[in-house]
Length: 427
Image (cartoon, rainbow, N blue to C red):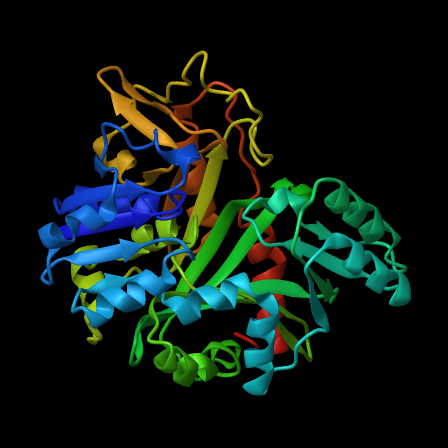
């Protein structure tokens, strides 16, 4: 099948790689300059995606993986193309957290007090008047700039906001802190109805083991699927968004993150697009061909997705400067970091490796990006503990100079979170 893959910053790179492995005829466009050198030698790359619309035609698929193309997606659908990714209304849900909270509240969900500010100084004045524990976020994907306050008077958040002001970081978003377990619920939507099973996911945002260190885009994720539409965590949350997703003609993967405790649930944010590394883990779990599945989603059709039962784990392998933004002189310009696979590494092992900031030449694979997100390793098993052991066994066969990763992805989930969520009655 002909597939035109339009990427912002390669968050959907694993899906691009999988579609190539499925022997689809794929062309890749990368929008943001910091990523344009990636996937050389892996995908056929183009410099202007609109020049290839006649090539992909109405029988192929156009895939978007970022929240900057929503309006174009709506226009392409009106022109008769099969488009998967998001929509203009979907993009707004991620880019405007306050809007998402308003819609969630209109669906009967309790939302935490949250506020948008066009500049950091206005947020500082607000915190001074409302001294409490706050969570601070900004609009870019540089997650290390986000901050979870500890001080009950907001003094630590004020110090971070002052740095925001000095660096001209805006706009900013404040949300009242809530104690509990963070968990996500996701499902694919075809513009009319849900497609495939319900996804339960646990993200690992902190850089170091034990949830220590700065926030990152993601260090690893646990996912499992269920078809139980009476599951309280789904029925009281994601299921309520169906009429809204129909109204905005959303077609893609829709995810909502929550904080839950024994009595309450609060929606935090929406991810109306392919996530990373959650999509890589979906690739591990899906048995059905992705081209067939995405074609159905884009065309508004139902699809009987064949998938693995049990649990999936993905671990991100990264290098400096991750999780921080690159310096003016890229870390990888002087000597490319080659990805070295052990002598026991097999073709089957490679099915569980998902490249992100990677290219290939005659000597093999190497890191080709600027931000340090090199690759993701996935594994699956009937129980979560075995799945984590399988993922780390595979990582031990991979070496990249300066590579690091968390060594406890999934541990807290099977030791604490799943038993607690079951006890509370959410799953």
